[in-house]
Image 1 (cartoon, rainbow, N blue to C red):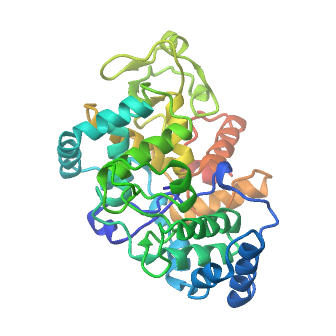
Image 2: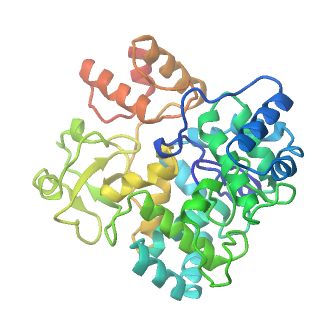
Image 3: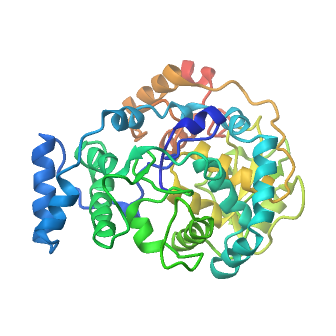
Length: 402
């Protein structure tokens, strides 16, 4: 469940079942992780490493010798263009009345399981339902990539071996336990398995036998999948029974430079600046940030500490905003006020902006056309330098000024 997957679910306007494949600190291995070269030699080296660490040679042979490189996995890894869409458009594609209705029906159907998740891990059913919906459309599209081949392919590839090589060995651990078959286990193109899309190491660390049958079956058991997802969110830092996101209204004379995840204030301080909820009450006693996913003309949200946990699941700001907002809808929130955001940048225009910012010395990460945290931070600095409203939203005018 950590970064990815754009499978058949896209036809149903879901996301990449691997909508999480961005690297997170908890998953990284030493920077010297080997990658590239001849694939057969890579597999032979991995098998030798496993045996050196104590795996029975016959077991290592059974696991590694059938692995094959999957070019379709590499193509999927390079084609995450869905994340280039702005929040309003992206969220409207993923969130429908049907998806909300099915989410609420599942909340009722599995009420007892969600009660256990909330009691044991403090994670709202709405939060877990949103992930379940976006990752696999409530279990309908779990992916048909051979998981072992996908992990081996991505561990061999030099883009993120530090993320995937440990996951390949975690799959070997599951195989030794009798809980993984390298020939038949399937899932998302990035190696995630089951209804809430968990990578092998996550399964080892957070897998829960929710139905009491003695096995953790994330592909076929809803109780196992939901309990495991709840435990994982808790392990990532989810704070029990606290909110995560709420839509707010801002005064016209608001200090836009105070928005963004870089700025955190007590909720009382935001209230003093004129921040008001569009529905319900603000969570007093907590700290929060005010977010403008499409600048000062678009919707506005207040993000509480739990919102940051979403980035441990997926590092795409647009995905995180949409998943967190969808959870609020499942929890009863109204449809956001889209406002009238200024035209933004997509595709080649966004890449052009990233190249210009990179040339000025900013760390915007990969030139990928995605408005990520590094690009947003750089945009804010340039807006301030140029005397523009500092709302982190890049526009054609800003690109022209640069």
